[in-house]
Each structure stands twice: as structure tokens, then as C-alpha cells.
Amino acid sequence: MALRAQDGSGRCKWHWFFQVKSTLTPTSTSDSNNARGIGLPKYQVDSIQVWDDFEHAGKPYPLGHLSCHEVVFKGEKISPKFVVTYGLHCFTDDDSEYNILYEYPDGRHQRKVCLERYEASKKLKGILEKLDQGAIIYQTKDERFFTFEMLNSATGELEPYKICIAFFHEHRLLRMHVTSAFFARKGEGIDAPVSKKGFTIFKVAAETRMKPKGQCPKEVRNRHKKT
Image 1 (cartoon, rainbow, N blue to C red):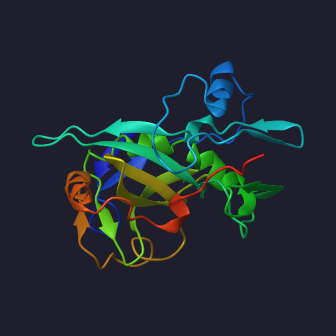
Image 2 (image 1 turned 60 degrees about the vertical axis):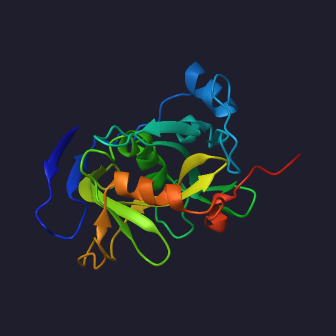
């Protein structure tokens, strides 16, 4: 993995480069335990904390990499800690050419699994842990997001990868919920400059602390259906 400064194209100030492998590996004991929530801390958050693994056409698809976790950003003045959760759109897309015939539910709705998004989602945790290394986060009317170049295993090309995040306050916790993550082909920061001012993760954390508790998009309140 390497970092380099952006050249003013309107995307994130930094580029992350990742080799995203397309080959699926069998579920390890660790992955299996993570998917079932074994050995993971429990947080007082109203979102899915552990996504269940699934199988399709005889292949296992682990989702332990999208389990709830903490991330701490080390700064000169503050070192904020966030509890991170992930949404269904990080690995599903009803309109993708990389879909498989498997629909995954999150308690609110269900969507087709997209292998392009699924493979890229394995890198999400590592990406978020490096937001304090120069990433610039932009605010639009409906979301905060950042983009950067990442190798798309489906195409073999470096492409803009967009991560959309909801920041909010919940039960005295700073919260970060990834509402969606995907290879973007158009939009601000992709084929047009970002028109909004960008902020560092430390500025976002300071603003989030001042927000009233519980203000967040409805997509954050995903949960497994009770059986």
C-alpha cells in the first residue's frame, strides 16, 4: 500500500492504492467466529454489528470484515474514537453487471449481492483506519463522502472508489456508519470537481461531538429480523 498527494483534480487529497484480489478463500475459523460475533466486543448501537456469512453456488462468502469495530485517530490536539458499523449497500447493488443470484436482507429491505462491491468491501476497515493521514471528507446535502483511486479486481483498472459515511452521536459514542461504498463512474469528485469545502477527520469529529444525540439517516437503523 502506498500514499501520494493528489494533484488538484477534485478528488481526495490523498490516494490509497490497494491490490484487491478477486479469488474467494474458504471461511477460516477466525472469519467464522467474527461472523457469529464470537470474541467481538458489543456496543450500545442501534445498527447491525455482525453480518451473517452466506453461501452461493457452493461458495462461502464471509462477512466478518464488516463487523462493528472501533477506530482511533491520533491527532495533535484530539484523538477521537469512533464506533464503526456498515450498511447493506457496501456489498450489494441491484443494477450491477457483477451481481450474483443472491439477495441479502438487512431488516429494512434486501438487495442483490454485487461481487465488485463485496471484494472491495474487504478493504474498508483498513481504509477508514487511515483517515487521519490526510484524507479530505466532503459534505453534500445528504451525505459526507471521500473518493480515492483503488484497483478494481473486476476490471483490473485503477478506478475512483467512493465511500459515503454518516457521522453522529449515539449513547455517548462518536459513531461512523458507512452507508455505501462503490466504484463511482460519475458525480462530484469523479468526473467533476467537488464544489463543497472539505474537512479532516478531526474537524468532522469536533463537529460531531456538538451534534444532538441520535440525529442520523434512517439507513443507519438496520437490524436483523427477529426469528
